[in-house]
Image 1 (cartoon, rainbow, N blue to C red):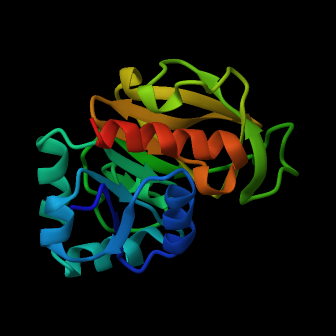
Image 2: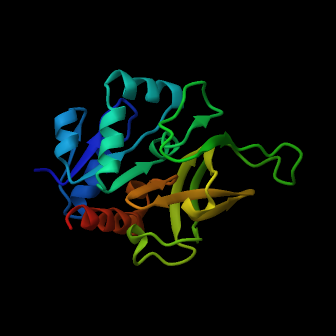
Length: 209
């Protein structure tokens, strides 16, 4: 049995996520097969690209129910970047509904009329994490740790208790969420050096418990 299923729904960046897990000694398989996802000990929903195109592909593959079941069964689940945004109810990027596994929405950076009106969008590069709650996947990650971001939209949870970290980019936005076995990262751990790999190693440990 594989440890981790990385869901393949045409949203890119899959191979780099798989290689990052392999680098820390955690077996991970890229798959769209429902039985493989069901049999995995943990599930990752990565993603780059547009909200609507990716969520439509996910639904065309009939994977929505498999994701819901995995989370309901208590399996560690990790959404990365677009995969995080899909966990919420809606996005300003498109018209399709999200998975609504967490209450809230996804909004676009808007610096109009602010002192940061020249701030570039998308937000790309390294930025710091500020902890509100510390989920187990952040064991060993210090306050202010630098992670790599590449996004134009960010999540706005309705439940403040699900906020794990915030990051300042002209506005302070939610950069990670956590609810029980459900984790979401706006940044790319697979592109964030040793600290990003540590997060993936910690997630792998949860899957192997």
